[in-house]
Length: 174
Image 1 (cartoon, rainbow, N blue to C red):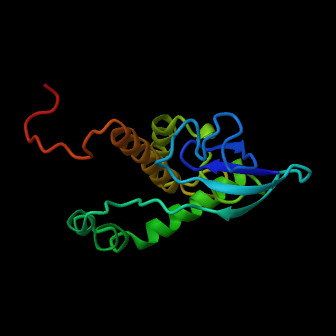
Image 2 (cartoon, helix red, strand yellow; image 1 turned 120 degrees about the vertical axis):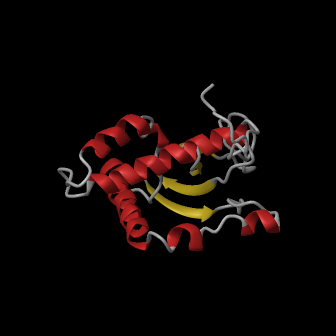
């Protein structure tokens, strides 16, 4: 059996012989639509956790395609180069979280198990500087939750056609 996996809304659905969704007959997630990346998987339901093998992943740009807009997003020099230890630590937090919440599955963000970023973030922020019961720093979990929240905010803004930045320098709270 083949299934498709949507990393955006974290859902699986069966793929028909023609490659489309068996329910809505589209080659993309009914929740997210064609503008998001999807992964087709071979699924063996007899295996306890479900053995999955990625067989295709359509390329989808994560950054702007305009050359100047790309240059205005200094991902390495403006972020990764500033925080190499923290970025590597949060990546490990992500891996450990996947083992906890999705044992035996490939690394992925299961959004169905992750809907309270701000509350969870606040709990980890309160305990910043200490270790959680699993031996992971609360500050690392705080950083992961903060990034998850920002990712969802930006996706919602993009879907609504809203800008990522507000160029209005006036008081935004009036």
